[in-house]
Image 1: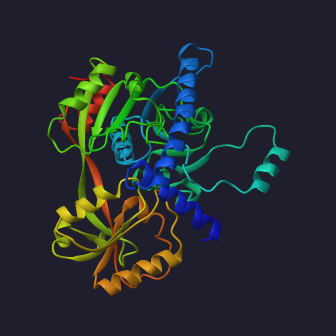
Image 2: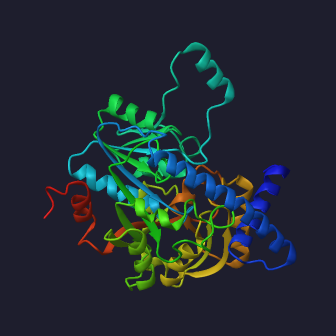
Length: 397
């Protein structure tokens, strides 16, 4: 990692600490006030853009098929990818030809010379990047982005397409692959493509952060924009009611259906096992009493670490990196050295992190990722019923 990249990462970590109130010194207070000023500007720009679309000054573009938007009001941490995966699988099981459209956050863009050459030799825009054609995964996590690559790997038969222009990506999926259902991943703020259904995810453990807009808080839009949701999914539910949060949702969106779901650990999967993936799969009970080093580069590492503790793992050390952090070999080497110093038997990470390290060379200790899946806890008997009720209301019941 270059000196400049290290400085940028340090600033990002410092900013996160200020947002979360972890620092209370004078410099942090001044920096927080500066961020608050920027958030007022950001809030005004977001609300102006929404107003322009609502009053048809800017126009969205319907694509003539079912478009399901899955997104949130905050940055990161709602557990969106497992919801998108489960929703896509349920739609596929109902006979739909599904494509997932993603912007490919933090994916590696084609080099400038390739873009320049394409524009020079073609009259049309370059096509979207196809992560999966339904049969094969065609790009790695660096080219596709973490979440699109995970979705492509876990959803055979589902098309996954990456492009910042998701109107173009959707039209391409319809024309090239004959898709009749589009899932717009992380698309609540993508207003150019009109969704028939807007599914808004809210993290029940931390619904709206400190209530401030970016960059002072974690909100991408004001809380009042809950009114744009067709359905609200409360994720990371513990099964207990939160009457205050429920009242806030109903205040801004009276009568909206609320479906609660939880992320449940399923098993541990070893990276690069001998004999194929099934050979490296371990039951959750294997963790009980096991000495581990936990590491992750996700928005909410606390929830991942709590899963491990609840499963009985002895966390000897933990390392937290920025969300979507791209690991270098020196990072992995440092983690193994830490594990050996602490007497750990293995390293455990998240599935999203695993796609960024599976190509590394030296693995002196086993590395596992924790596989999570979504379970409905309130509002529907199961996810398939929720999909039927939401996407096929005439057939439901």
